[in-house]
Length: 147
Image (cartoon, rainbow, N blue to C red; front, side, top):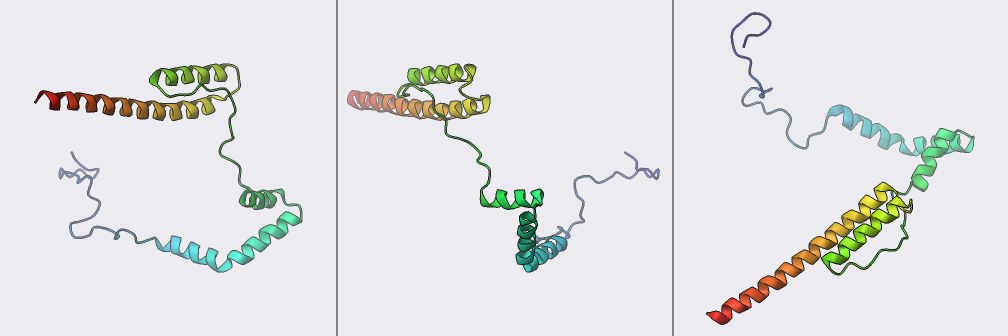
């Protein structure tokens, strides 16, 4: 491979720094980040007061900033629908069918149905683990009786 100047020397890839110069140590933060944090820390009280004053004066953007801090939007909501008990793998399959039915009927959004289905999948895995452990215990006890 040649570079744009026409030299036929290979271009080193993947090592932006020469040996012995590993760049900045881990955990060291950039100077501009430190400066911004210092400015915000020093003037935080005045900035908050200015935003609150602007919100009181009718600035809707400032009001939204204040309200989002006081009462942030919920990431989810309680869901109420009929879900059969899931004690066995067959019960989990029935519960998943109920989730699909509720989603099709509009009782659940697709995102809500996906979240409930993922919880049911965790439940199925835990049931499966317990069943496998019990089966293994029975097999081990039978093999100990034979020996």
